[in-house]
Image 1 (cartoon, rainbow, N blue to C red):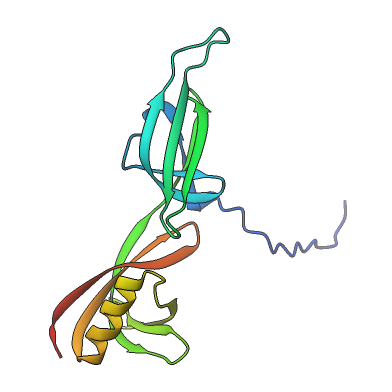
Image 2: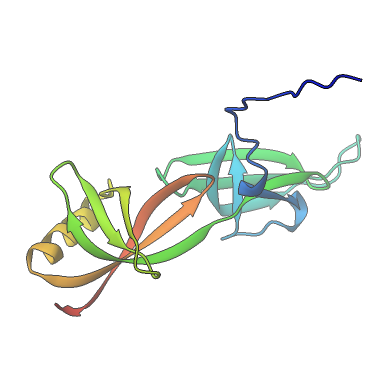
Length: 159
């Protein structure tokens, strides 16, 4: 027996907790699916008839939840697809830095400073204008598969 210890320096993340398997035939419109490694919201599902090789196929059309690109995938309906764990969290906006990062207040009182301003022009304008007017703003952050992005904004009144 060897008495030396082995140390494995693993830099890769298995990503196991970021998604869960679900049978392709049970995924419906407005659900979520991973297409080409991206978390997508399903906008269209069509199922083809069983062919001579025995598998009915599901054709998914999804919109990437972070960059709004349209992606498509065809999977046998009996096979499993990856479904991302998508969470939405509300944070109160404290400050906007000059380099485009937001300072947000979490529910337990800590600050979160690693989120950039959204790329969506209307949402970006609403956040900047509301903050400039001194409104108390709450941003909704959608996160999936290690990515985070602001997807909505609420005004909870003046400070």
